[in-house]
Length: 397
Image (cartoon, rainbow, N blue to C red; front, side, top):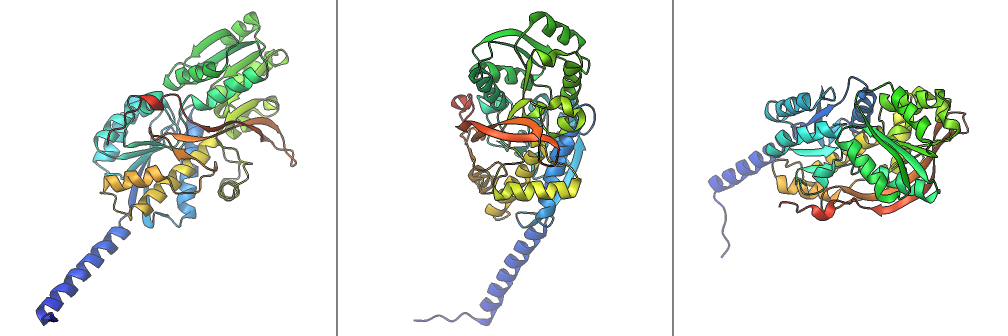
């Protein structure tokens, strides 16, 4: 027996469908709100500016949208201060009700920002900071790294310095969580003599005492992790003191990237550094990014800009693949974990702790065909490299 709906029932069904369609349309027109909290003042400002510029470029190339929904980016300066970072993050998640957080440069700020962000069940997509705590026993379902774990780039340099046969190395890094992670990572793969291990102030710009110590200990190589203005000042002073004649300088990508090269110039030539990304990587996503960044900003992108760009692309994929239903935290988490987007670094996947498993490259600073001083990729140090802390992560469901 075939049932025919009454006129009233047909009207009710049509109304329900219309309401559903209207709700879907309203949801798709609601903006995705991003809290981009970064270091935009002080010695580390160049790093935060590059992250911001890379992120905003990805959104612009996507027509101002993330996952098909309009993007609203609320930008704030953490001033490289954990207290300012925590208070601002608290405001962004409670008052502004952002859907995602990103942008933090420094790990001491990230560890402070994590508490209010995770408590509010807001996803944090890191465009830089990758503290060991969040990789290991404090891993969190709401934290995803679109960059690396803090130790990783330093592990790649440690292996490189070991492979090149340097016998005695001096180590210098700032006295904060990522500085400790950096030298831990380097020593995990370098097994020669450590001439000295020095931790400097995070705002230090004069390295006279450290240079005197290097002159006295006579290492054959020096490894620095001094991001932004710190590295710019150290390298200028290191070369100016004549130490580069007797000691080979190594660093992670942070200390040998385009922001530092632009400020220092010729003294950077010949410096080796490592990164999970390089502007000359031969893949379509990277070529598009580098060309668009140069056109937009008139400079080559740094790894910070690449990470900001990838963070936006990861969020874009998560919004798209969760069909814009950002209130469904399980669906968003699943979409983030799948990471279905074309990264500028090439292939990568998330480990159980939401940190990438990826390749790390060796770069050297040289002059290109145009006479520009820049990085050139010369080899792969690690293939599909995972961090050392994932085994301690018992990821909550």
